[in-house]
Length: 257
Image (cartoon, rainbow, N blue to C red; front, side):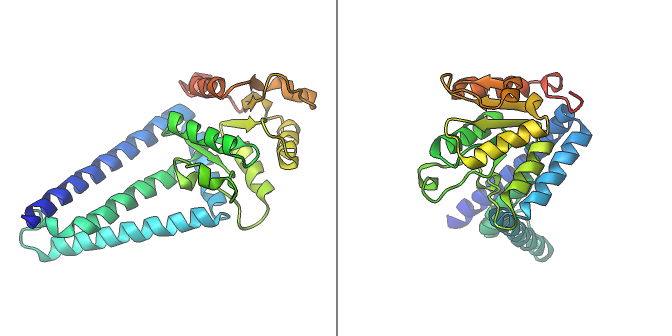
């Protein structure tokens, strides 16, 4: 009885892995068509490079390769040794889990970061990141938001989307992401000195054309040039504007703006 259950489980996992791979390829095609090949490749290169400065991202990369290799090697050995490999697939249900998780992690990390969330590492900003990730998938939302004081109260959808810097200066990662991504969202509900630095950088680099500010209506902007950004006063309005921006390539901010 257990052999039958294990075999069914292995086949289900195998089918899910294939569907996941097909879905990832479809998502990649969709993103290339929407962003344009050059912007897609540019965002992907920057995301991959900046991942080297984050211990969390490096750990996930190592884990995905280990899981993928364990599952792939076990499956290859089984196919080579077994006379009826597809009938005896139930013996590999555990490696199949490793293969499936490895595939999902691999393709997840291959997605380029195209939306950058800036703000203080507070629960409300981290929840905004989570909401954007859920609403905009497969478009990848990245940030550096994390704090030991607040992380327990927030469950970010994909831990691999937090590029908290452990090597080098956080500013370099933020500046490079801000230049490369298609959209920058700044949460101004809590303003700290680092957030003020980020705002000054946006103005200095003339990135207002692709920046959305989430700002309570009563608060004033102390940098006049920030009025050239899109300004919203609620999370719902922010989510709706980002959705509309990614509806078609025509609504995406142009680098020639």
